[in-house]
Length: 159
Image (cartoon, rainbow, N blue to C red; front, side, top):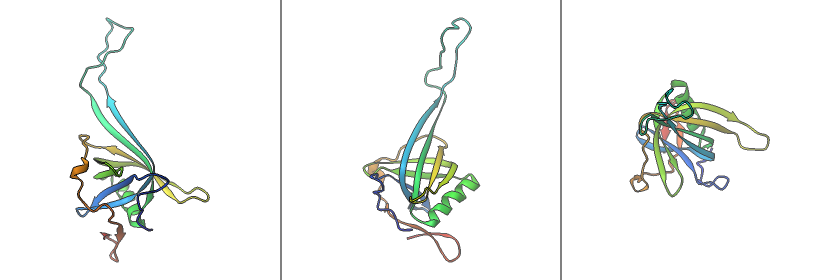
């Protein structure tokens, strides 16, 4: 497969990750949804049964990122599938063209889509692990279009 140009179905959103310390393009995102979650701590009690109260500033926060991805290569597909199988937590970058966000994610679900007369793609859900941080655009100074491949030994390669 060819490396996506970043303009797929009117979108410039790319999913990237790191292999051997090198940033690589996983694929172009046909759909893209980020759900920021707060798991609030309920402190309601019987003295006021008509209302619910939460402990302010406390509770777990997480991010679920769902997308339909058109992979840049077969190797990129295999990499994501392997990370799902091994339950690996890795850094991923969602590149919007004018800004990028980096998070530590586990691949929590995959679903292959092969609709009639459409390119095959994969639905991916990434679930955050650890603190939710953001990579500021001015800190992103790495080649953003490195393709991922599998070398003759079956190892992941980039270039």
